Amino acid sequence: MTPQKIVLLMLMLLAAAWVHNVHADNRKTVCTITVNSSDEKEAFRRSLPADKYRFVELVERGRPDWLASACHQGTRCDVLVISGHYDGRDEFYSDRPGVAEFLPVEEMERASCSKSCSGLFSQLKEVYLFGCNTLNPEALKRFSPEIARSLVRSGRSPAEAERMARSLASLHGGSSRDRMRVIFDDTPVIYGFSAKAPVGPVAASMLSGYFRSGGGAEIATGRVSGRLLGHFKSTSMAVSGGLSRSDALNALRRDYCQFSDDSLAPAQRLAFVHQVLDRDMAEARPFLDRIEKYVGSLLDVERTIPEVARVFDDIAHDAPARSRFLALARDADDPTIRARMVKLAHRLGWLAPEDERAELAALIRDRIAGNVSLADVDLACALNDDHQLDTALPAIAAASPAPTLGQSAMLACLGSSEARTRLLPALLSPQDRDFEMARVFLRHHPLTDAEDLRDVTAGITSANDPKVQVRALDALATLHVSDPESLEELTRLFPAAQTAGVQVAIAGVLLRSDYDAIASPELVQTLRESRLKSHGGPDVVDALIRRLEEQ
Picture 1: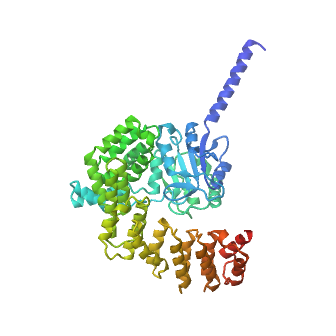
Picture 2: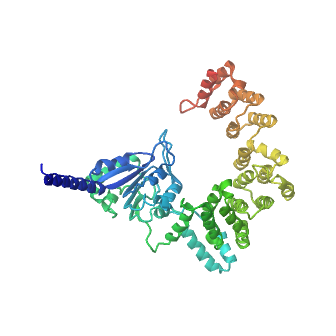
Picture 3: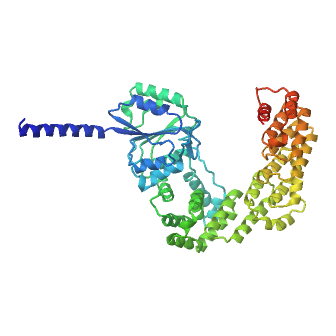
């Protein structure tokens, strides 16, 4: 072969290789995130030709940072298919045994906002969200009237304050649809569901019908498909798009990305927190969740970084922001929000430890002065789990000389033994609200004293109402009773129980108790011979018998 022919042959081979590479590079990339059913993914894979589409599964089983891994690999998606149950707020998850992978919306925001992951979602033409409520337009957040009152304090008229508060509520409502639009801001077409989504096999069947009708030609075109919507017309499928240039959500996205962009140094993100706090408090309040989470995520070692320490110092010495923030906190209609803001003020350096305790004590004092709710009791106990508010008890108790049961529950949360003594008998009250007050308290302060346990079990034995007995027993079951005398009392009650429900509840306590204290052939015989007939097949009594026989 002459040199000219050899050169010509090489050029032909290179040209063929170039054509092949161009052809391969022209394939569209369909990225899939499969945290539950793979039915939808396989419907796409079966129907789209391999010479035009390549599939990349982003989930790496057993690797918790799989989305970050996809970012680092430089993956770019033309189409994204997400399959998973969606909780309507925070994450996609699986109900399949052994599947640990899930997809937090927060991680999606990070991938969308971070410069380190700028390519993953940057060229998307379509997103398919196969999960319930993924495009639900209903607001997830409701803001309280203190927002409008804050605007009035800052100089607005009541009418203007109400109008601005409604506007802020609409902007920051955080519907699932808006969250997805913010994440996929440049994506022309986003498919999802405004309510319940079809299960994987049903969705796959509908997709297959769509592809058989010629739908494959529409994939990755960035145009809404009436054909696809038609095949899903019996479902709540909805369609939306990313953000237009005039969309009010653009400013919100920029703010969100300041919290989510992992290319920003801690000092930069904290400086942005300070900027938000310097806004009108009505505008800063919707960012409470994100500020709380970011400030709480900073490790002690990060706080010692000179740049970070300087920003914290700037915030701590920002007296106007402190004043506005605490005024809003004290005016909050929701006591849980008030408590969260007080704790955040402490972390920001606006409240010394003793001042934080005084603010939280004032919150409890305000709540105990009104009609105490179960949420009030739960909050009081939670705030005093470390007993830091015990010192406030004398002053608060003095303001309630004849406390109601709800007030007694809150005082018991603050360490009052007298209030606790008044509260515990409510475990056997026929009044639902009284019982719930005692149960909420027990969730934070389980019975550990044998004398208290014996009093409660004796009360259960002497009660005449099976409903009262069952719910008191259910409350005891969570305590993992080990006191032998209390357990013996319950075993004596089993053959005397009036209903199968009471026997099942007794078995629930015994099943979670100290087996060494109760295991005996006599007890097994009592359970077998005395059990009342129940409906629905094997129950907790059967489980208890099996467990005792294994001892």
